[in-house]
Figure 1 (cartoon, rainbow, N blue to C red):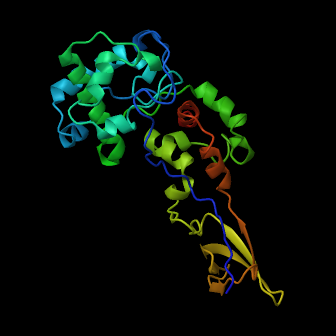
Figure 2: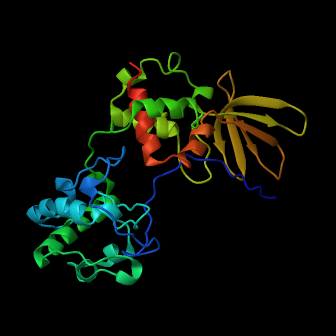
Figure 3: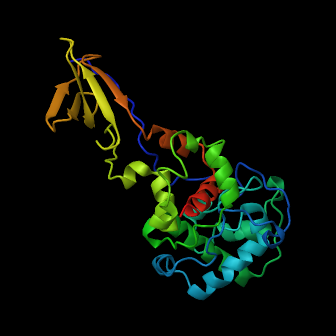
Length: 298
């Protein structure tokens, strides 16, 4: 039987990646302390770490509490207040150096001496302060790799007006949705975190089945199957992979067909595809702005 490769968009997952080394691909340029930078929507986050992440990463809570503000003041101007990188310097949370570090043996010398050849200046810190920053960084790295230890804070850090502009402009959301129609009252129906998750990954919110090669939930898509005989069947999509397609018709009957090349002909309509494509383009700022706007739709 000839195989046909069916590439079907599946809601994007936020996967952890190993990032650049501490002074990696984007050479930092000296800049002002983070405390003097204008606030950026979407970057409001804890600078201490959740109790679960601190305990599991076996760091001293007092050192972590001291290290967070120190990092913001001394390093955040380039690496960002959450150590996840900026256009000046790379992400430290997912850097190879942090992932391989033990008790500051690798990271400590970099903080202590800087990397002038890479554009990273030496920072005026005591050994105890360096140790505190390293402890805080380890908590952030641990939390990034163990999602159950995340500390969820206020999701409403965006600009609702900018979110509305994005919704009606660059995002193209208003092509399918309306603030006075299907989205009316959505801000009162869900809390901010749930609301954000639902518009970012609606397939998951609807109970869709993920997994490589699997079709989305039946409630999300419809499929039309045209057999060699010319018979056409349409219904909600139950399953689609390289070898089979299955649907449930309007009467509730289940139909499954073996796929052999382009026979039978399969046409899928996925109303959530726009969300999948948008997720690849969204920035943190866009996400928080749109969430802030949707929350206003009471």
